[in-house]
Length: 558
View 1 (cartoon, rainbow, N blue to C red):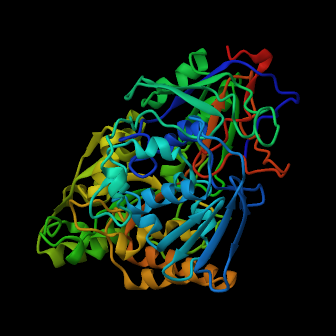
View 2 (cartoon, rainbow, N blue to C red):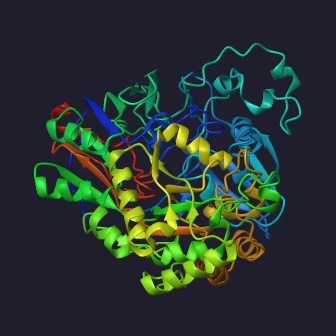
View 3 (tube, rainbow, N blue to C red):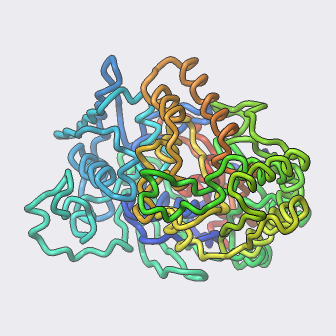
């Protein structure tokens, strides 16, 4: 891991201009936003999570003061810190936490993530979550991801799309539904270090937020700290990777994010910029396959796809030289992936059984594929985001297939804007998709992406984007969710990895290496001291890091 050393004695002041890789569709409510990875920069600026992660990988309370569970992990009680204010002056308490969690679990988009929750009770500063069965990793779900971020109930209640306004919703509130919806979902109200100022969506436009004078970790807050240091942040969307890097190198951006090893290598070679990079609890880059059949495809929309055939999937996997891809597209810094769990994660295996690069095996499997389908060639759609770097990276895969199979495989890259791209994944409107996902501390955090109950029919919103329904996978995911024994959970996660290797639901490429590239005057990228003085995790979880402890030389980011 490359890190930039930060000098001591932070200085207040300055506006940090941050280059993002993508915008997010339907911002900024946690239950409705199709969150691109870069959404965490504005969302973490505006609010904080119920829990945090230490540098040792332990989940600990943040907005929560204490947490306890019953013997079988079906009841979790959280006591919320007293005195935390939202940016509209309202207070965070148990009922507000309940309102946030109820909205998230009742949403068609995010509901699957919290489907294990049966109901929630709240009073005063306490909130108790009752689950349908044992759930040993609940705090991890409410920590370093969007589910645990808290927003003003006053703001959420004013929005037309909040689930509490929807008749038939399990959290329907008739009194609330009868009041006018006057709020704007694009103007979030959180309790974080920065207060929303403006948002202009799309490529080249920006999200602006200014210092929150009443931040609960500030001089006027309950912890009496001096946070944040910056006066303001501006997050600017620059989809094109080369353009984003050149804008950082020229000084137009003070800082940028990237998951492209080649860009990180360029920054290293440049020598004038600071680099923080990490793959801790990070994502996997892969080609996601739509294998919807049966209940996940009742109208037969995907029935003609060759990707439903395991021999076809194996043939195309055997033809991908993952080491070459990681070397050429990852600047020699990334590691070829053989599954969703990177080294250091629970569930990692050196040998998952995933098809290795072998042209002879690729052609043998392709012969079986074509014979089963009674055809002399296969064709399928292949999409990627509209970043030219991604298009070129996935074009390399197509060239490998052409070299291995000639005219037996027909496909071409179709670039799609990232906000629209995520929507197509949610509805299953694809066959093969360039993708990046599965960062997280605990293997249970991946359940919502893989469990059969998350595989809704094509055309409906589903978080199991590939829509595979595998009883063996479900059984292992249930062990991970409900068994408190670390050894049993580890064994189940390893079996999940083997199932992916055997069934080839995805074509793995490399474990993502995230880089934060910044000007030399920018400090605190990985600074994350928790309120009790514990060292929090720095850069991790797919490029996520804190903004509340960043600062610039002389209080000037220029």
